[in-house]
Amino acid sequence: MEHLIEQFEEIGFSKNEAKVYITLLKEPAINGYEISKKSGVPRSMVYSVIAKLVLKEAIMELRTEPPTYTPVPVKELVMNRKRQTEETLTYLEKELQVIEKPVEVNVIKHIEGRTQIIHAMQKLMKASNEEIWLSAWEEELGDLRSSAEEQGIKGIAMYSLLFTNVETSSFGNAFYHREYTASVEKNRMNQRLTIIIQDNQEVLIAGFVDGQIPQAIQTTEPMLVLLAKEYIRHDMMMKVVTDKLGNDNFNSLWQGNDLFTYIISNTKR
Image 1 (tube, rainbow, N blue to C red):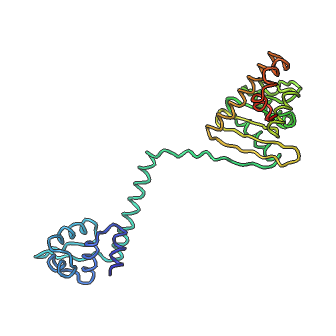
Image 2 (image 1 turned 180 degrees about the horizontal axis):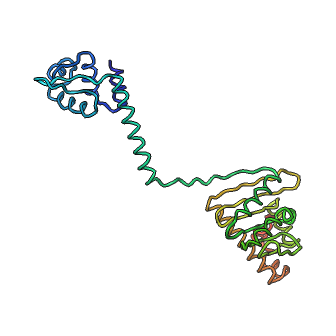
Image 3 (image 1 turned 180 degrees about the vertical axis):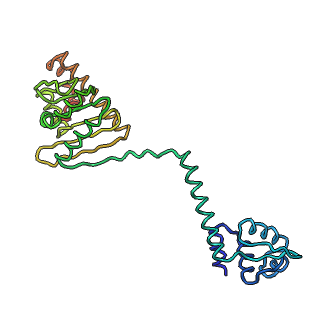
């Protein structure tokens, strides 16, 4: 009988409540004294247990003298418990959803292949409602041009860092890495690092390597969005400084210094 009592506990009955109900199944219509004697529940506790079972609609009190008790039929008990459990769960679902705060999970999506990456870039640009930040190379600009122009017509602000010698109005507020500085960047990173940021909400970072299948990640993770945007900002400011000083004057700031040479070109003497 112990396993039956354990199952009763699983549905919210105490051990004593289970003992009383099982006793009444065997011998219905007996009084509290007899229930205590046959179930093993102490007499000092049996009437409290009986009262709880009546409230749970597991047993019924018969108007006899003294009062006697009979169990609710097993099938009816099971149906009652199912109904009560369903009502409780429905109530909890409704009430808890009101106070539940959704967990933000910022998944990092991996993309492979040039066609898939270019399609994801175009889609991300077209999803923008406020502004686009872009760092892209000449080899990819043709694939992105129509999406950029389409958003420009809608009035979406665009801030671009372009690795090309050819100036264009297609990519909004543009800064340019000409051939010399572009080659320094490409040699340092061993790839054409391309970034698109949509509305400060989502970023796609791709690496195009000649002769290899391109790889990219796309995510709404706020820290990665911020990091990518700061990378573009700092690169833009370096272009402003370089253009202001001229390449020769700028190079004189770091050439001959082993630390700066390693930072800028990723090469050690």
